[in-house]
Length: 182
Image 1 (tube, rainbow, N blue to C red):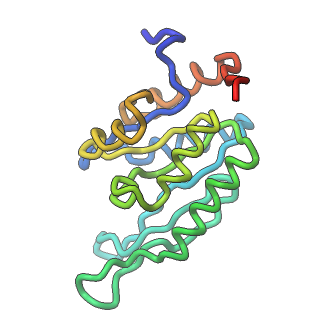
Image 2: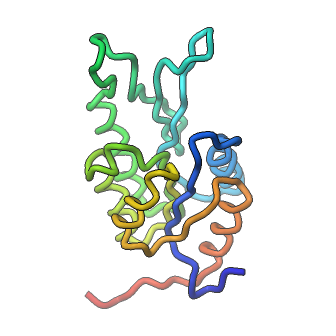
């Protein structure tokens, strides 16, 4: 059982490449929205062709459900299909959630760019620094990098809705712990 001393306001939702329910984060977010939790951030939505192969990714603004095409097949083999302007839009979504002091920010995912100190890493770390609860999906293989970047201070959760809910209940039930020292 987790005690209040070990509860952290940010958590890595760790998944394996072959994780069964990759919809757990979306389900958790939808439940929180239904409970009127002020939640923001970005989720990913995979696009598939008729054969079931992934053809692209959308970033989905949690607060508005607006979809931003972040990755499409590259026109030239070997090139990255990431749309850099779309990445800037997703960064703005998280920045807005920080500015609006939402109750909870979710980010899917701590990807290759973030692991290399790029992508959304600044906004992710800013969310933590502002004391806004953050739930971020982290591939199991990237957990050591996440722990290094986050100072090994955050919680590590299994990738399931029940674990997310228990963590959120523990975090939301905590009294304000912000320091007033500057």
